[in-house]
Length: 214
Length: 214
Image (tube, rainbow over all chains, first blue to last red; front, side, top):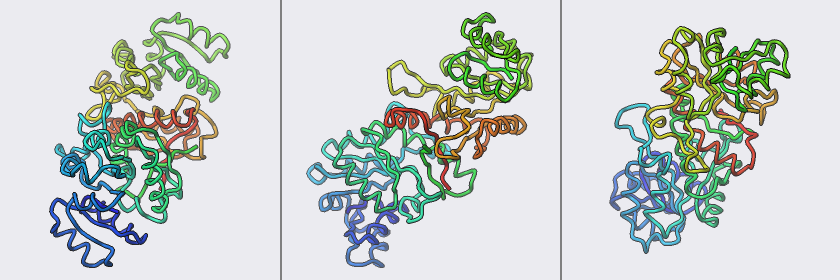
């Protein structure tokens, strides 16, 4: 598996994938990224590091774990040959913190568009699956989900890629997965972020998830 | 109680309020609105009809049940003297169906703004509480909520108005109420609508609600 991004989300996903016994390459802008080196040092020899293109080239499933504001630049830096037919689980959100808390969504990437769609357009030969962007990083991978069995939504144009993503989501202990449809449905899950942020501010923590109660 | 609007949401709320033994005036543009007459004919003498100003004048708690696209025009048609200090439970959503299904949100009333905020600005002497806008009309008032105990969010600037709204929400069988904060937090609940619509399209029905699983 390839993990694009060395922040908290990237490290959390990469650690979980190692725990699940996958080989993992953490990709960053430079193959000698300090945080990626730090991460790999303390891990088994299944933990590898490289640049974004190396992470894309050698693994068939990639997690996009960079900040929303950088996501398009990162995916555009990857050679088409390295990404063709790959499944990309897109965890990014088009959050704009330039006016402080709470953030809003980048206006050109919401409502009638989404960051998920923009990433799919930037990588037409890859199969983007939007998922995991609606919870904090610890909840993405925790064995015990808050409240028992919350919902994870997936969005994407390619059925096989969504099946692959669903298998990993079940490995991440998500048992209630709703396939919303094509990548345009990522608008819905990205637009839940403002409610997530406000709920987090009320609780004082992000230890919760959303459930479609039915 | 006053109910502004004679559509499915207005009728559902008005019927529930009668069931709870409140006097209810259904308000519409004209005091001889055909659907309001139809509604009141089959009800007890606690069911009254009038125009928007009459409904506002005689009751201290009002439900705003008109379509999002009409909501601002409706509230602006009400005299300040009739609305001063009143609690308005705003169920409207800024949905734009002009491009068909799925709708998007009216761009000027989302993300960095909301319809709830616009209504509060239009009626500065009333106390707007955004609530109930995130479920279908039958779920707003049903005794058995889907999945047991889903969440209802409230947003508003005035604590007393939010307490009044919460009391009614509990009468409507909502037991898990989260007060998100001031009226700007209505952005969060209005922005969940695209996800609600997409989930409804997957299920083929609207018999569900959202739960903050924690």
